[in-house]
Every structure is written in structure tokens, then in C-alpha cells.
Image 1 (cartoon, rainbow, N blue to C red):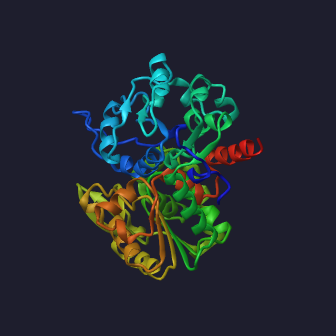
Image 2: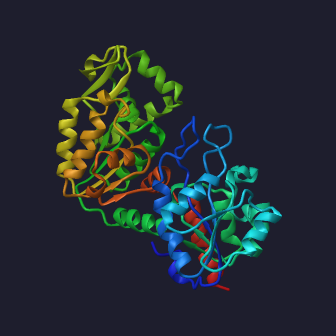
Image 3: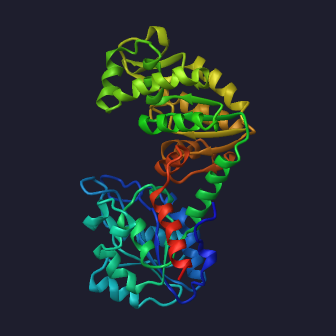
Length: 409
């Protein structure tokens, strides 16, 4: 996996280093206050190391996207980031204005500057190739001011956007500590799988999970795939059970009707390696009711059933490698959090090597107090699931290409 440069490959003392991080954080809709500093703390290692080594550190980051309630400036992020790092983080309310450029030029060694929300820049949303992104105003304006680009935003590594791939064509580039750790741990785990290997896949992004299922069963990585969440509902329907119109309409509304036929093909091809629930929990007047899949009423399926959890837990406890992504149900409601909690508890109790995907299941794992029981909790749900599906990550490919490009010079 070491086919990209890291911080160790460069002397950053006195150099101006542009760092792309992912500090996209939950914001209170009423007060506008940042509710969680987890991602700030995550990137603290990279930023602090650069500062301690005498780099002039310039940070690029995003918060939400246009049209959303939490799409805002990064002024408050600078304050929270300063506390997380334990060093002052200056802030400038622009990306490449004369003020921003002058602020970058004025930096002294070990100082840190956070630029404005990169998604205020319209070209960030275009998703072009690194060569095309290198011609953007942002890259052309900032590149002459920097000596090195470091991408530490693993959570966004599956995106091909200006701030993630454009600078890799104009200046030497490297992976930050978060990016390096994620790629090394997940990459090594996938290349050196101990069997039996179990994938526990849930959540609402059924197309992503089904893509992973096909990949890990085709290449022999997984011995069993345990499905839950919306993914399970699709497989139950694909297996010929009547999940009733309420749940069928929900699947259709999410745009996943084509996934039903795909799931049927996977069941026919891989049989018992795909384990779907034999009972589910539905919401009846707001209460939980566990029913067999032969007797699902016309009510929303919100969790997998208790009997299925016994079987899932047994398979997990016997596994030597476990990859988990996505909650098992509507875990925000305590009545329907049983599936998610029991699966996390089983993984924590297992002696197998465990990797937890980012997003909701990572948050649930930490909230249950099992963070230190897992071998690795990923910072990026989208990026990690793309790796599990065997897909390349645009930002990582850009780092690899940059190594080849600049190592030859």
C-alpha cells in the first residue's frame, strides 16, 4: 500500500504546506454551534506534527454543502480546531482573495492558517479529473504560494474534487497521518484476511452495500455476509417473501427497485453465504413488534428481529476477521436500537480482527463505550465502503500519480 508519499518523505521545515482535512461537523440548527469536535481531534496529529516541524501550515476544509442548514463559514471551526490541537489556528474568510494570499505569504514557521469553506467555491462541485482540476482558479492561484500539498481527508477520498485532487498535479503531494493510517490498516486487512471472515452490512445506502457484497463474495474475501437495515429488507423481498406495500414503496422511493433483482441474483449465486434475517421488528403504533418474515404486517420494518440476532451474534463470535458498516435499524429510537447494539456488542466480544466503517455505526460504537474494543474505527464511511467494494479512491489515485510525476523530476 506504500505507493504514495507520506509526511516522512519531506523536510517541511520553513516550507508552506497546504493540508486538506475533513472537519465537516454536526452543527446545532438553532444556535449554529458545533456539536462535536471528533474530526478536529482526528486531524490534530497531522497539523500539530507539521507545526512542530516548522511548517507554515495552510488548511483547506469544507462544511456541509450549498442549500443545507449547516452550510456555513469555518470561523467557528478555527476556534474549535485551535482547542483540539492546542495551538492557535488563524482564520481568513476567503480562499484565494488578495487577503487570503497575503495571509499565506505572511505566515511564519509553525504558524497555522485555516482558509474559508472550500465549498463556497463553485468549481469544487464539478468532479473532474486531476488534470482538469489543476486548471481551476483555486489551484492556479494557490499553487505558486505553496511547496507541498498534503491530503489528510480520507473521509472524502472517494471524491474527485478540486481541493482533493487538483494540487497533486502542480506540487509534490503526500498523505497525512489520518489518510496514511486508514489506507494502511484497511488495505492490509483486506490483503491479509484471516478466515472465517464476516461482513456485517446495514444502513440505508443499499446500492453501496450490495456492491460490497458482490465484490467480497466474488473474490473470496468473505465467508459470510450478514445483512441488516434497508439492505436486509431488499434481500428478504428478493428471497420471495412478502414485505408488504409499505416497505416496498419505501424501497422504490429510495430508488432501489433494481437492487431487488440484483439481490436475487446474488442469493442464487452465493446461497447461504448471504445471511438475511428470519424475523424483523416492525413499528406498530410506535411500538416494537417482532415477527417472522413469513408474517410481516403492512407496517414499516425498523430493525432485525431478536431470533436473527442470536444467529448473527454466533457467526460474529466465531469469526477471525470482521468488517461492519451501517446500523441494523432505526437505532436513534431505543426500541429499534437492539439490532445495532447487539451486533456491535458481538463484534466487541469477538476475538477476531475488527474494522468498523465510519458514519452512524462508528458513532453508535463510541456511544456504547466500545471504541477501544475495536481494532479500527474508520473516519470515512463512503471512502471505506468503496475500498471494501474494491473500488479505487480518486484522491488516493491522485496521490499515487503525484508520487510518480514528481519523483521523476
